[in-house]
Length: 197
Image (cartoon, rainbow, N blue to C red; front, side, top):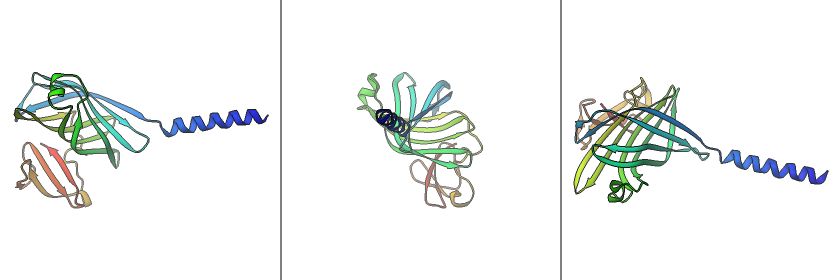
């Protein structure tokens, strides 16, 4: 009987450890509109995966990314935290993304790229604005929009503490409201949100 309880205890411990390390993955497929140096390209089908870790962080992965004639492979942003706002969850990131593929572009960029991300998951759909600066001798500004804006994603901000108090363009010049292209919005609670219009 003692052996039975010890076996049961070991099994329960293994189950709890597995549950504690559990992670879930959401996959979204939609159109990706790409603009190279402000010149729009034809939208393409794309897939984004959001992997939610047990530690409360998420990994955002744009699968098999290609812009123009350049094949990049997966673009991965790790360690981002989602912010719940009603039924929507917002994921923002500004920093360096990983490019783990063996594609020539990924290797030329040292398997990393500066990236700004603003994404919203709501109603089973993902909307994302992704800005990349590609430096391959000549600098290319690559702006991407994945999916369609929901009411929450339109400005990435709501009334109250997250109401916009200042809008800047990509070079940091103050604007009188949202302009076409990438906008940087500072909210009343001091946070910064990137909005692509």
